[in-house]
Length: 93
Image (tube, rainbow, N blue to C red; front, side, top):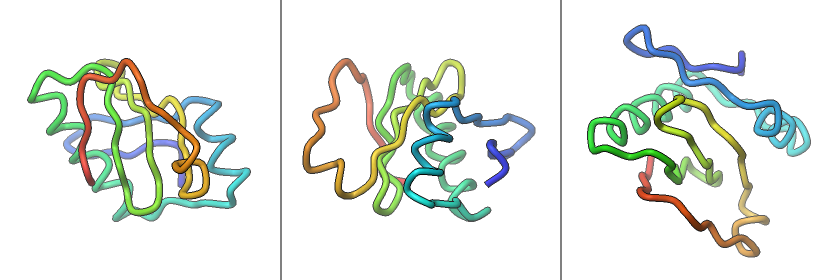
């Protein structure tokens, strides 16, 4: 993962915290996964999402749709312990 997904010249970036979480879990998103993430963010943006939960395979990503920025990432093991609040939308990518 290069830290961003580029689709239709609009980039999705990853916060320092999100990049740290991916590194800690030794996860590297493929180009296809980044493309799916970008498409989900685009769809959420078109529907008026602002702070969204994007589920991508075994990952949950909290994404600021307005800033097109992944704020944090939770893996399968963290999903069982987490509650996501203050989101206005969700997408399965």
